[in-house]
Image 1: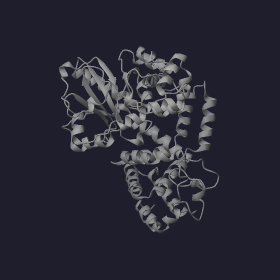
Image 2: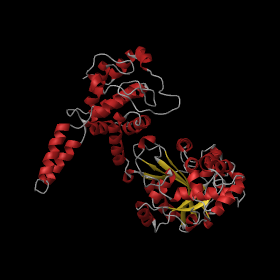
Image 3: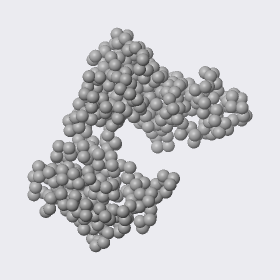
Image 4: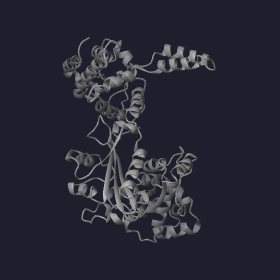
Length: 495
């Protein structure tokens, strides 16, 4: 067996052919079209869905749109198979995996895609062994051999792909490599279903490797290494950090920032939360981000406001640790500040404006005659249409407190947050996260985020989700029944 360095030499020899393999993007509108039987349609990356790796491995010539020739593809497969060779030790398997990872780091996107396809299509469980084990297990149900038959069946369904991933994880940077590889691959899943087997396998493995029992909760402060603080600036996904003075404000004495860390990724928080310690529930993000404001008096702090939660690793999509993070942070804060009684968020409503653009007409239909007439007078057209209402809502920050347009926006937002979508889940992504953790929708805040981003997402509205520690399980039970737990204030806004 040749060493992994062969891949680098072989692909280098193909460099002159790369121009032929590049295809134009499928369409200028950004739509991802379903692949046809032949190779004329392309996924979002511009690479066509063509022959399977099985067909290509048995071929002699490379098709124009394929990155690796059949010969190079076969040798690449041999390199991957050598990693899981049962005759080699874990250490040697990890060394070989590290060599392939080195090739991958230098490979072009379409060459990387060929490796994903090999890992997804060529490392599958033996269908005949699986079928036989399934039949034996079915026949053994209810007999003394049932347990042993179940074990044989489970073993038969485990794909060599899982062993391959385990070997990649054996070298020091292996887990980082796999997380980054999945992040590379995720944007292409919708367009190329052949990658789903690898994706599901990786999500399963990551759910085990990144179980919260293996994670460390660490506080991130202004005294943390500069490289770690730079990660906060890089990964902050809710309210962009604009400067070092901005991040210093978020790490001031009246603030706390905590992250989950994995032993194999010690310098990267997997997820982090920013907390403000104040004396009441916050209704606007502006004072929390005000760099010139004095720090709050911690002796008077009764409320912990979670105002930003950011996942940092795209490759860990589907691996959930946000629920555990909030629980651990609450416990830590209660130990440090026994006077804290209220734990709530100040959260964006990222899906509201796009939802209202599609549902404004249906919401207007719910109004009684009096409310519809008042709204019509406010927008200058009776009866008001969806277009009239949405046009008037564009200048949301200028609307007076008693404006029927403002009231209608609040009522629509309450409806959006308080009712499940067609798939029996909260419609908003942030709502799904917090409600799934056992919080309830507590309060809507007008002009909570007057930034351009806030206006674009939700007309500037923000929402408080309350974590009532005594009712988390009750709220989860309600959600499981398709009922959104909300406060009376939110209920009063329903149309």
